[in-house]
Image (cartoon, rainbow, N blue to C red; front, side, top):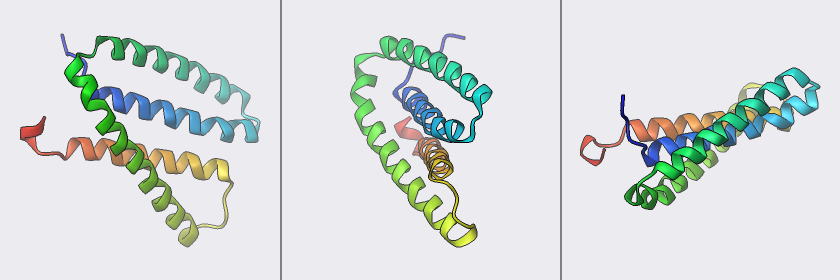
Amino acid sequence: MNASPTAERLSVMLGLLVLMLSTIPRYLAGGHDNRLTMITLALVVVAAVTVVHWRMLEASERRRLPMLLKRFGASLLAGLGLMGAWHALMTDWISWQLFIAHAATAGLLMHVLWLLWRPAESR
């Protein structure tokens, strides 16, 4: 299995890092020390893999990354709006820590779906 690194994979890994970082305040506020330790270890591992992946990217893939990160940022903003509307309509007030974790999760899911549903000729 000799898969070459792509900018899409790197953008998803960076999104996963953002998602894991967004859960840290939730675990700190809730006193979940074991979960905080596990997410911190996973964060370090994914960050290391992301750095290795970055170093293996070809120049053409690196040039595509800023556009993908803009899409990811737009997806995060859409996730923030979607989760804000959802929690405003369907739930009582939740903590801001839980809200940002939900918004980051929705944003990452939208980003991945956006990557999957692009035209086949642009892949």
